[in-house]
Length: 431
Image (cartoon, rainbow, N blue to C red; front, side, top):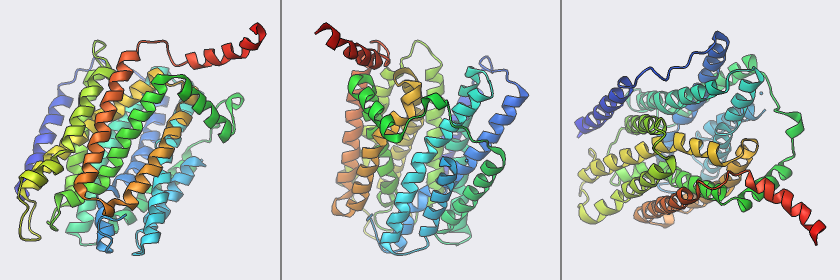
């Protein structure tokens, strides 16, 4: 069955290459040399950070299983590097409590990765007086490199460390720590600290109170946050489930190569999203309903194969026929992930006020992280079909909420919650 992996990878690579080569150059943006230098520096650091993150992805469950746990469970950016390096170090311990501490540290680091770096980029971009349109160019390049190419190379590199060089499942975590340390050194030597607008600085409690008011006052923000939490919750749970799903009888599967294939499928989704977002006639709220339904259906495959495809009798060996079907379904899910990220960024720019965006989205990540921790801690108490079924239901609910968001999307912008707040202050005068 080894040829199957290469066939899937090759087919996805051909489709992605075809989509990228068929793009026209009419949307090319002319930028300054100063901006190009700034952009390239950011992309270098972001790629190193993502390499440190992606190297670990394919081997989290595999490493835990080798320890005998089976299915069980400038400041912010500097903190990200240190936290993730410490998370990598904990992987050398076979003790479950230490591994869970590392998982918590990894979760904290991931939250910083998806907030601190973006916040620094936006603030520094405008601080240096660059054109607003150029910011989208940096974001698109960061997604293509960090979430696509670097992810694929990280998967292949991890596969080489574990399978070709026989350095063990902890070796990708050690390599990740090296990349994170290099990135931290570049940050300390070339990145300037920025604090945003001093007049806008508020303490953490005030920021979260403002986020709560915005969510309670604007249904669109509440819907968008719930949609993102449901999708990310399913996605993070999937990270732990795909390995045992593809090798339920200890089949010998190339984790790093499969991970690289998933990332190639995600790149395919990103290419599709770029074309969809470029068409003004296509509403992101409309096509995302379809994306969520497809992603929900793709995670039902492990349940269907469990009922209709007989499992192999002999342990070990290559991937089974059921595993091949599931791998194709998982690639479809990863393509949906690739469409999701740029699309959710587009919707955030439409519905969430810029000055409160980071706080509002982190507000929704609190219950998300709690949920993921609870699921991973109790995963051994439930059959895998239950876990995939739960994720599928979450994604289907996300499609329903997306439909509601599409229905009310043309209503006044999210700034209306501020107007309501001001009008409420004037009510006592009319009493």
